[in-house]
Image (cartoon, rainbow, N blue to C red):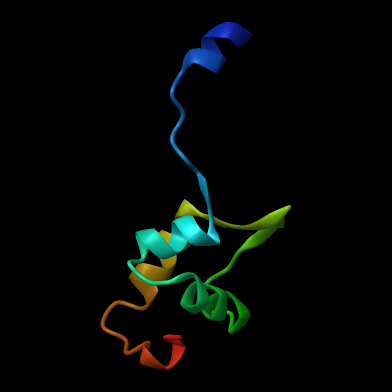
Length: 73
């Protein structure tokens, strides 16, 4: 596949900023930062913190039915 074809192709988002992650989780950025600080949600630093989609899916799966109220800011 040529470089031009790759550039025109629509690629799905694989990593999300904290702000985008908060929207996906229907939360706020302070809560998302707290989840990252406390180790409940893993992120990587690429300039700014980024959360991979597979990590968001893992977080939702592993915490289904859990009370995470203590993380709400």
